[in-house]
Length: 127
Image (tube, rainbow, N blue to C red; front, side, top):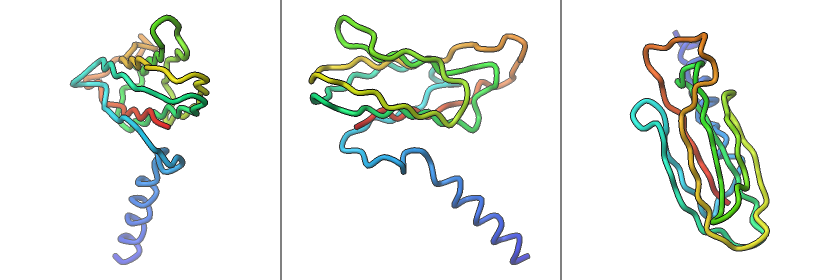
């Protein structure tokens, strides 16, 4: 019984070590996209010479789906990717201070898989 409790405890401690522990954020926005909300749009003002971290984690998103992430300023798409393997982390450099639009939405990536429940993914964008 004690060994079982230690095993469960070790699993929980591994689970709590998410991607966001890799980064020491000054500013971040965090949200969920998936079953209840299939798209989320955010804005973020970033200073010049910023390393912007993008993280997506999921333990429940249906394997038929991915999360499309589009980061743009007023005129240009700076980052666009559909993520279907989790956890995901990428860093992009923002050279000039600017307001960014961050769009995330669920996107079907495999029509051969049918799911009863879509599930959710957690998104963190910050610097």
